[in-house]
Amino acid sequence: MSTIRAIYENGVFRPIGPIELPDRSVVEFEPRPVADGDEDVGLDAIYEVLSHRHRSGRHDLAERHDEHQP
Image 1 (cartoon, rainbow, N blue to C red):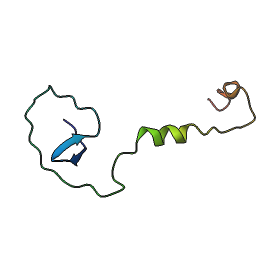
Image 2: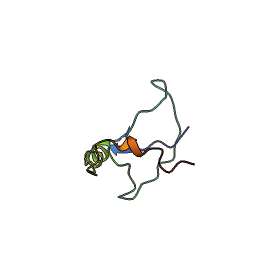
Image 3: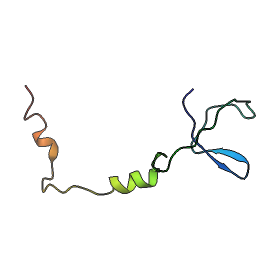
Image 4: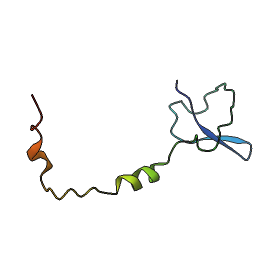
């Protein structure tokens, strides 16, 4: 199983993402605080970056697809 990131709030560890475990599973872990800046980037930030388009002035970029192929 991979590392699970969680936030500790009101006496409860709340996972940041989905966890593939059956409900009421008993688990064992050793909490380790993560420094600011190490947390996962949220999807909102990723989609914001992807929303910026590069305008090359060319409408059909596929027309030169095979230009540099051997």
